[in-house]
Length: 115
Image 1 (cartoon, rainbow, N blue to C red):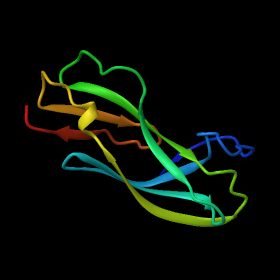
Image 2 (cartoon, rainbow, N blue to C red):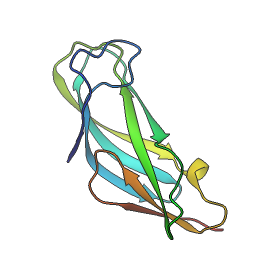
Image 3 (tube, one colour):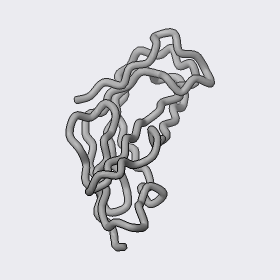
């Protein structure tokens, strides 16, 4: 399990609320993750963000991170939930695959798609 740290003082409107990635896998055109975080009182939102452009190496590698906005939730319950993110915006039109390096997850993930 990978931890994605954020400050314990993160407030509503911050995308740095702490969470952990318990599972991560590419499924077709989706990145499916199981996340865990503290909360229980408010809705939480997650988004997938690219950390810069893909490398020029072959296969190309792209650093991604998941950001978490917890609405200032003061809850202490451990919440586990599944999230899915669309990977099609991260395709390289000159290649049929890209290696995804997800922050908070140790193993590289291979995304294969039709060219």
